[in-house]
Image 1 (cartoon, rainbow, N blue to C red):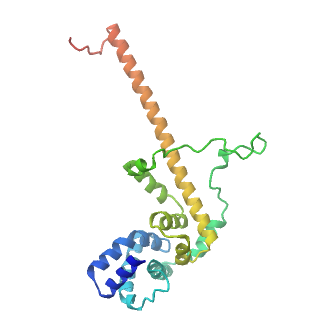
Image 2 (tube, rainbow, N blue to C red):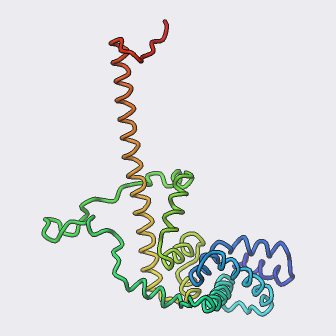
Image 3 (cartoon, one colour):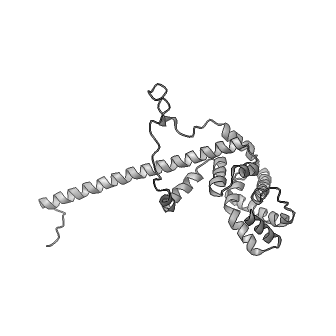
Length: 243
């Protein structure tokens, strides 16, 4: 909150550095937000340019009844909705989220659980694989970050936005609900589904990668063994180092 107030005061003084900080702090999240309401990222960028001007023009009238993030988010959503009308793609995020939540969508594939006729019904048939035994090392790994970005990008729009706000931008549940005008229940469902899908995506990736590495290791071992046999039997194509 102190950081926000300092930024607000600097913006009111028309501090150029404060504007650059504003863009750096919120651009990534706001692009994702605008993109929910318009047809593509290029249009979302145009909406955001309008939003920055609106923020600068309206900063003196900002009464701090809500958080600065929420205020900016509502400016972006209002502009994006207006642009969406011109594109005949008008959609209320709350309605959009409601429809997504209402769709039956298990967080985990039902095949992962034992059947009702089993001795232990509804227990795991295949337990989740520990893809992140060392979470800190994994997050520092470029491959993991690339896979994580791909997983998030593959999510449905409402889930991707809520996950981005909560887990990447650090918003709390109340802030997300206020900014997106959705119920706490819908926010929780969207977040749970998004997290489950991302975890499953990562699990599958590392399970498959592990299998491929094991297969590659077996191939190399087999080739090395065959090479050794050829050397011992004086087969053609082998190179014997001079002693």
